Image 1 (cartoon, one colour):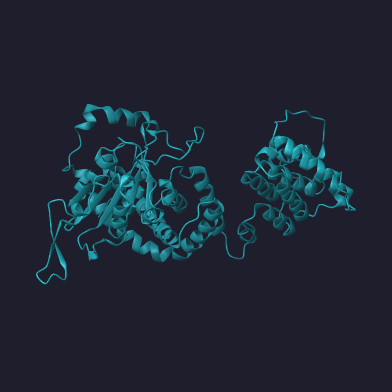
Image 2: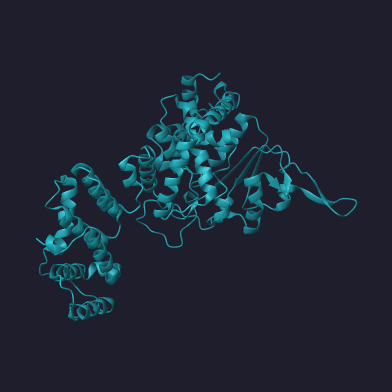
Length: 486
């Protein structure tokens, strides 16, 4: 039986002399316990291959290491020979063929030929090759360098610093076969102590497969698998609820997932939580486990520009808040509304207090990336609540700043570029000259001020007519009429 304090000290990567990876221990253990495929994504020289070789050695498993960029199909299956009846083939195994492997590692998978990637599908997903079940195969792990984006974005923090021109994005269907897609730390992400360990001669000679700490890895895997079985029953309803919310939020964040991925994520949440309970003890929180599983469970982690950790964390936080509320809780009604602006209106109608309304307003403004939409939305909210809500300063200050651009028009001068700026200005002039059939002069002034305050800068990036339509819709949403004018 594993002692929890001892398990926390043993970990996974530290005893293997892989430093700076301890935050990934639970993910690695979850993959091993569930025998789920795992893909490591990172620059060269970050110990991806070394980790896998040492894990296979610590588990005492027969391993095959294939360089996918050089791989031929015969390297996997051996030499095909016709049977005597000439109606079927048998394979003469070579020392490197896959038939007796228990742990398979496909390195450089993003450099593999498309036809061979297709042949990897059944190995990774079904443990089959040439339609034959690989009865001994348990673990299928892979590694790749980050693929180079078509157009490098130097200011994008999520984009890897190193470009690998030969590393191509994986076929989406192949990437979707990996329940865990893990970005590994490079030198800049290592702590000072971990960097020292990496370069230390003393540390480099300490590793040995016979180490007592490493001999406990199979026991850790068995303990995690045992915890998973119990947690699947205990947390099934909550995890199902959480994942339904996560899938919708990921779609809203332009990170749409397949139904297969939804099932994978549900299982991964349970597995990561079981791994953390084994490694860290009973204080491991389900909240953190779910976030870790989501952070390292998206196939987009292997894309040219992976999703930011802040985006994934925000998706988790919102889903966690909703899933943690009772079905009949009014907060649940609010948070299940996917449109942030409508949440504010619903909360106001349900009689939420000023503090809660302020929180929802701050979320609505923060969730909107479009500056024209933020200006229009801020103006509508400001007008709706300026006389009847005592909002917090965190909500009032951005509302006032955004609304001032529309409500306090002032003379301005700005350089106008020949070409598109002139075209846009002519369109606006023609629109201003159109007869105004509206009886609501206040709303008409708001619309004119909104369009003029965005010229020329905002309308270089967005269509002013589409932005104006959204502004009018926001005014209607918050019931802004003549009576609301200052």
